[in-house]
Image (cartoon, rainbow, N blue to C red; front, side, top):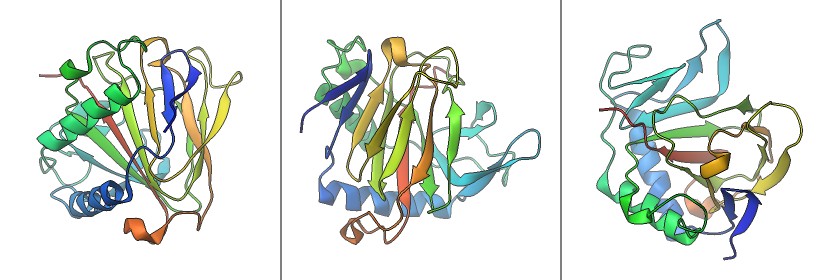
Length: 215
């Protein structure tokens, strides 16, 4: 596994997760998708509906804030963020050499929420910034299932310059430091490219761990 710098503070590590790790994450994601707050298509403030399906743990994200309870879904408190996910996030930062990348000490990285997005073959995610967090700690992103085109841009605009990267099953992508608020999105998913041995027969799972900076 060779880490590739896409932009300052943005690192791609192909094939970082083993097949067993991917299977375990798929099992966990299925449990979280069932509740207490079920996976859903997020409704945007102006009435649009996101094509990706999302479930959250630790904190519930809704446009454009975090809450402990999913008031836009069923009012329930989301599932807790497990300690093993904290350690997974720290291992991810060690894999990209967090000190050299400007992220700080990986041992102090303590994510407290994750957004789990499921993409079917038609789902897309427009260019956006992850800026609802009060912390500038890096985002750790894990991909399982179908390969997608991940578009990673700049911090000023949704338009070019940006770089398109294929993210495949098992890939790790971390962005922080000067790239923490870069625009990014998913313009395309390649159906049928995932390995069913992961336990995901179709579609793509993306798990993004974040530090909210909230009490």
